[in-house]
Length: 466
Image (cartoon, rainbow, N blue to C red):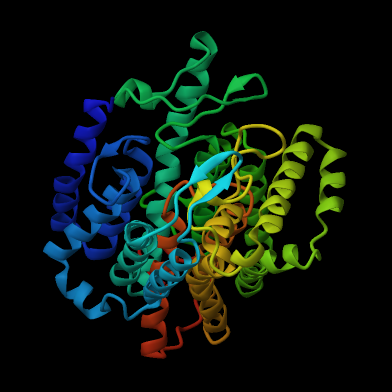
């Protein structure tokens, strides 16, 4: 039974969004609502709605933001034009959902279980999910972030959210010592998440889905703070130089190896490289995520070498990585004639529920998407995130403002980092799609004005803008 406190929080988020959009400017309101919903609303609970499995945290967050913008920023939504941007890719996904259903209309036996065929209802369910998961978050970002000042606002709020989360992470870690398991989500919302231990202590979750999603959030906040530091800009009234060690501390306390590597490595590169070169690295990260499926299918990716390398330092991580590659091989081998459009549902993917001899199921997002939607579904989902990164890299070549390029590079790196993480881990939240939409909206304004910013000094005063 769903927690009444959790359901009340979800319901009250709609009037909260209206209040924020009424009080704050467009970009600030959008950043506050989306990030507040992402990091503070309860997980694993929601309202029962026809067609949609459940109206949970992620759907509520972006629908509330869309409602607030419709009431108080309607001109921005109309000017952006729903469907005129990259979210039109969702329309292609709808068409592919029809083809997936047509090729999976017959029932089948999988692991001794009868899986029904797909019909019109399955098409509607998948299409609605694509709209709420990809179309709405991308459009909210594209419509409400329209200038270089909006870009700065987004990164400031993202870094500030990380700073707010640092003491909450410390509370969970410290309180776990006497109580063994202590979760703020259980205390506030009466919603429990599956506890995971790292180095003998429970991994903090706060109000996120799991420790991995918390680590990627903190890594994103750290990269945002590093971008603001490179541009010489504060996080509200806090100097970015002072905020960086706090954000790094919060990331380390999450005790997730992948998140720590992502955040610390990209932060170091941001500090030592010129903004243009860092943007090129961010482009390379996003490109790797896009071409990885092709490399795996052509057996060109050095998976065995990576497992051997990981085994030198941590055998548990090496086994986990090897298990991921085994999952991919299982799904790739079972695609057969469903290579392009997939099997439609998780239950129809051959062997999906019995990976490696255990009942643990598939793990990485990309391989699950591959099984259900085929290679076209994977690349469409990656494309809507990658295209803004590619366009941003091209735009940086004609910008003379190091501060602006640093901010663009930071957002590109955050999106690219999450794209890489989706190769190994789950979707968790719609934040990378929203950020890609925001990047797309900012780039539209830069391309429309064709203004070349003046050269700015290395240190920008607090009151200065990009």
